[in-house]
Length: 268
Image 1 (tube, helix red, strand yellow):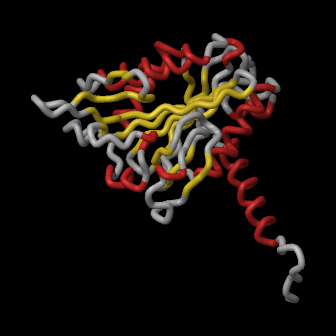
Image 2 (cartoon, helix red, strand yellow; image 1 turned 90 degrees about the vertical axis):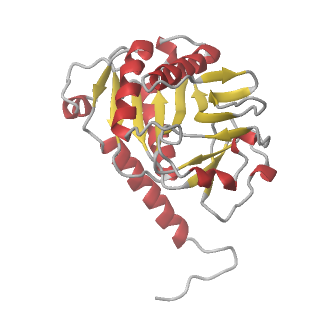
């Protein structure tokens, strides 16, 4: 714990009550590495050796399946890699141009109320969208944040941000995905969030005519995060992510070296 605190420049940090540590990854993070990094961060929070975290990242193009995903909603299984996710929800897409934000927050020291936590995520997204003059809205029975694009006689609503969370012993994992400028055609390989009605689609900041950069989106998210969840401190130390990457690589090497039962490994 002391070595970690020195690395982030605050040897007196009290992780249970200190500011949330913000990490911004500038290159796409493979999904298995993100899962491993989140798992490790949560365990560190639970045993008191690591801080709460907010992690901004992008993924390479991929689909994830939440705990209620239906096989029929994966329309093109060969288009991108598909990963099971232990978060709530159904199928979703992640890829470049989408700001993914994973939150590892200690709800034991906040409010042990999952409904309130999800409501705070919704408020965070809606407030951030407001900085770009976009009215994000909620809909009963449809998770996420929506934009009304209806015309006279033509009802239309598009989803601009997804929410999917998991809680482990009152510490959060996963979080939100805000469409800044992703390739919206990539959503066609799934039925996003299980909603097949043509009245409901997906959109992005750029699709709505706001030429917003990722840095500008981050600025809005950071500003409103602090008003809802509390102070942030930027953390240049990325060792916790690098350690997760090494663990995933090691596991992949180990799996590749195993042989099927009844098979012999070829002689060198």
